[in-house]
Image: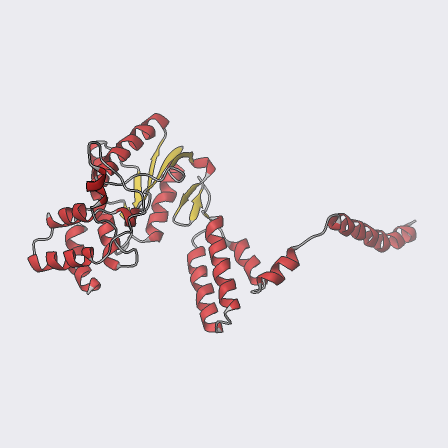
Length: 301
C-alpha cells in the first residue's frame, strides 16, 4: 500500500524539489549526494553543516497534511494519507517547539511524528523541508547547497554570509515547528573535513569513512559472530560494507579487515602491547642485525 501510494504521489511532489535535494529519488541516492558534496568541498573554503533535531519525530501532522493537501487533488488519496499519518504519534516526553505567543497546553495537544521505516515517511520528509530549499535557493539566492533528508550543507567563502543563512534557516524551521541540533550544526573549514553521508570529505582528496561508521560495522560483524550466524549472512554483511566503502579511500582499511579475527576478544588480545615491548622488539632486531652482518664485516676485513 505504501509503495502504491508513493507511485501516485512521487511524480507530483518531485516536481517541487530543487536539483540538489537528495534521498528517496531515482538517481539521487547517497552516491549522487556524496559526489555533489565532493565537488562543493573542492570549490569553497567554509561549510555550514545543519542537522534538524529529531526530524521524523517532530514532523507536525497538521502542517504536513496542509502541505500535502495543496498538491494532492484526489480525495481518496488524501483520506489514505490522513489514515497513515494518524496511525503514529511521538510520545509526549520529547521536547516540543513552542511558537511565540502560543499556549503550552495547545502545543502539547498537537500530534506529531512519522515512522522512520515507512517508505511514505521518506518522501514526506523530503517534501516537508521543500519550502526551506526554495527559500535558500530563490529568495536568498544561495545555490551552493545540498540536502540529504534533514542533513544540510551550505558552502561559501564568507563566514558572515553563512551565519546569516543559519539565522534564516532557524526562522524557517521555527515556522514548521523544528529546530537545529546544536551539537551537530556548526560552521567548519573544508580543510578540516566535511562529514556527510558516512564519509569525511577533504579538498582534493578522496573521502574517508567516519570513525562512527566503522565502529558500527565492526559491532555488527561481531554480533553476527556471537550469535553463530551462518556464513551466508556474514558474507552478505561484508559484501554490503564493501559496496559502501569502495566509494572512498579505503584500500588500507579493507586490507586490515581481511586479517582481523571475527572474535573481538582475539582481536584485542592480538593488538594488546605491554609497556616496554616496543623497546624489546627493537633491541632484538639490533641483535639479529649484528649477528647477521658481523661475520660478513670480519670476512671483508
